[in-house]
Image (cartoon, rainbow, N blue to C red; front, side, top):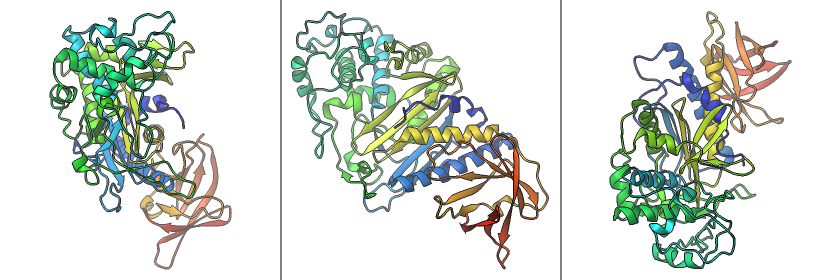
Length: 493
């Protein structure tokens, strides 16, 4: 799969995505009275395209449930759920559906640690044993600088990726207890000398959470709830799994796609001692609130959970790998894409995958969660790319008597290709392939000429052949004729 953070250039162009209502229940893209009508219409078309494409991806990839949200500044501009969340396929997904967000948990752990840093109870470059005397790995003859909190937050401390337990092995996914992690670490040897190699480490961020607990004198989950989740109003986010909501508000998990097109059921797990690194659950509505908080903190200059300067420090590069391929902040992934800095994190736990991508300079963000082992980053990139493409599309002049809704619909691509959609787009129509990995790549358009005739316009703006839509006896569009051949209209949108 492609890397999670490949949407920088697309996110950079999301300035046209003006906010809509803040209600997280299938938030529409338009609704604020002060919106510029042209921008509101553009965002409405972009998000309608995103909805059709996401549901197409869900169906083609056989993903039971997907929830997604788009954030601009302090507002959730759009949020929606797709599919169903229970084994029987009856409970619809919404923006409030709860998923395991796995490694996005690390962002909350990093925020907690930096709160303690602000209070002067920890130093980022002090040896970790100052705060956790028991966190001493087995002797290693290689020369190394000390393992520090900065090294743990940037995955550059040289630690093993995991505590020494097979908790990613099904079907039971037996995560160790906090006590087991503490005992086992004494027998583990560093993989690399500290600060020489980037090695993603759940063990490392678990130790960060342990440090928060040690210096605050408060159990980790209680600390996060009181100092982060509560103040930010993240009511559907937890440091743990709400088993009582499983199969109801919390989506059930499914595995990777099999050759026969099915996905195996994945049972519920307890992250136990690995919770600070991989044990949180949340809704995309809450992830959108978290994103909004980061943008609000940056724009207001006022302290809220953290000082703005602390968040800026977390979102700058603190470690870059020797090959210059991987860069990391304090808890946040940080990378440059198309001249835009994109920060955030992805998550993958048994039965669930998620991603939170933020472009701080633009105040734009996308959150996606699903209850299957698939690619949420691809969904997030597709959302961003569609908004970017619609924002850049020069509108066609209106033609009297042409109602674009008459032509919108699903058309047969058989036997050559999968079915495709024609959707209203900047005064004309455009093709949308629901099975396309990149929905906004090379968007050709149809320019209205009147009388059921349109002109094909390439993604480079070149005008090509004319096409004609045919109607049935009732006056309904039944097909599109192009190069003398017909593609039947299967249904409307």
